[in-house]
Image (cartoon, rainbow, N blue to C red; front, side):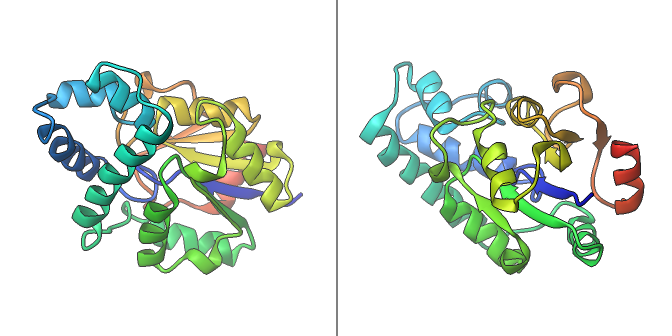
Amino acid sequence: MKKAIIFDMDGVICHTNPFHSVAFQEFFAKRGLYPTEEEFSLHMYGKSNSYIMSHFLGRKIEGQELLELEDEKESLFREIYQDKVNPINGFLEFFESLKENGLLTGVATSAPRANLELIIGKLGIVEKMESTLASEDVKKHKPDPEIYLKSAKNLEMFPECCVVFEDSFSGVTAAKNAGMKVIGVLSSHTKKELPVCDLYIEDYRGLDVKNILNLLFN
């Protein structure tokens, strides 16, 4: 039976968290707020912009205000990151091996589509993805499974035939809620900080597609 591989983006395809931190630092500094790295690790990585902004600004950020503030912060991120797009070690080689083995691939990110297009575009793999979903494409964000169920639909695959690469608690939870196999990418969190995954990797170097599929589906 055919299988599909779906990647989250931040912390899974590229290690963008340090650059999101810089963008948020600039964003909050403009408002006289200076969160520590510890606060960021607790309340930023793997969280939605709505949660992050509401938490640090101390009030519910939603609707039009959220759209405007999100646009400001994500524009800062793209400005900072556009010349520094760099995939996690071994990702491009692993991705090429997926395509050589005839696997369908998708991206399912909580980031805005403009970020997705910047990163996937710079890596030159847009045309090789059969599904690309960003925050604008769903009503409910991770840990809700909507983005992964929608990805499976786009790929014309049953959820149980999909393997997700995720690095955050909410992302792993979303993939598991969708009934998919999950590989935890330990770029931002330790095993203990994530829900239980089917496999764990530090990066993509030396990963063998057939071995992974045998481990997950046998």
